[in-house]
Image (cartoon, rainbow, N blue to C red; front, side, top):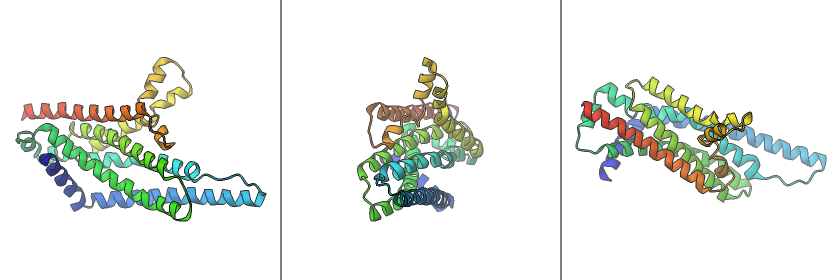
Length: 255
């Protein structure tokens, strides 16, 4: 465990010593803030129109603001996750330190978990910024906090899976741009793959849709923890890190 934390701190230092983390945090905050401002403005405008029409239908903060915003965070993450993972191993390869890492007495799994954990922590920092916006809803309204926490759990699990995929892809090349582009492509594919069910109901389409990360996020966004979705994300994280371990093993043999 000590080796994992040492690797994790080293990677976090690489993020926060350079402008990388601050740029990601700033851009993420600005983009999400724009989404929050727009959806809140739409909510207020719709409420005012209902009052002018004399309607008394209650408006739901969780359904009309929080749930759509959680889905927006998931979309924004597609663009930021590749930027987080692309340097994890690709930078080591480019600088030539991967051989030292591969021949060190630290086990491969410790290296992988340390790097992946640092990526998860940075991604968690991005999610934490969104909590500041949601804080205004609790300050001036009374949304239900339990669905919000469940939604954050879903975002963290989804992010963990995609970060594991990005970690694996980063071991395949020494070019960070290629690693980032490939990670974005795979993450986007895992997002849109469920679209086939919109025009096809065959078994193969249902199977493809099952592998979509957004399909398994829907229940979390509604505030429901479904065991099958939990198992999907945890299994995906395991497989991503397992593939990374096999890739690292091949690097160790070549070193």
